[in-house]
Image 1: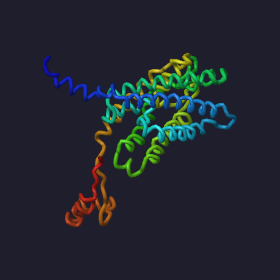
Image 2: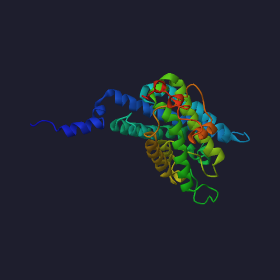
Image 3: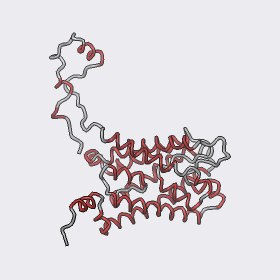
Image 4: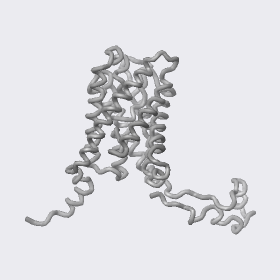
Length: 303
């Protein structure tokens, strides 16, 4: 028997094939399954409770609920499995090289199964009237007969924009090892949860329309609810997958070009007028030296 092909070995290592046989990987995937199921059950229950309340504008309380619940789940699950609980975060982590392809596939499968379990339990215990009224808390765009409902392409634009917002605000900080270490886990979780709450607020209060349940931010959530409840949830399900995937691809292309260094002003600050005068020759080159604006010794590399 000849020697093993080195190219095959490199390919297997690049996709993390060895992790399939690691018990720790399966434990992390199981954690993702349980966390996703619990998140779907808890989040959907609380959101439906807010919408069915007798408040003047119950949608205003939905972002607050999202913020609290997401923060609690993140701070518990991040040390265990990374706290993805959504194919969006798993996908971007794979693109950034934080997660291997093999682990990512297990995570997404676990998230989808967990979403199905969570919504199945929710449907079993929830009042049928609430199930039909709020489509089990799934990702709904609206039936074909709703003229006031948002169109699929408008929902796609919202899904893309809100997902990109969450990635830019939350993931940029989470993947910055130096700043994450300085801020600590609670603060990073607060930023991510805040970004998600902001995205939900924008979709359900500012741009939301009749028949539109708001931005999904989690394709597994939308799939689980559609499989359990069916009906109108299948209408435009592709939007809640294509939008986040496009957002991840665009964010990745942007993130690799983000500046690694930050500018530190030294000695004296010059306003725009002085800079303009200096560029015209009134102020000599020696008056405003390069070292005045930034010093190499004060620029830190992002690890």
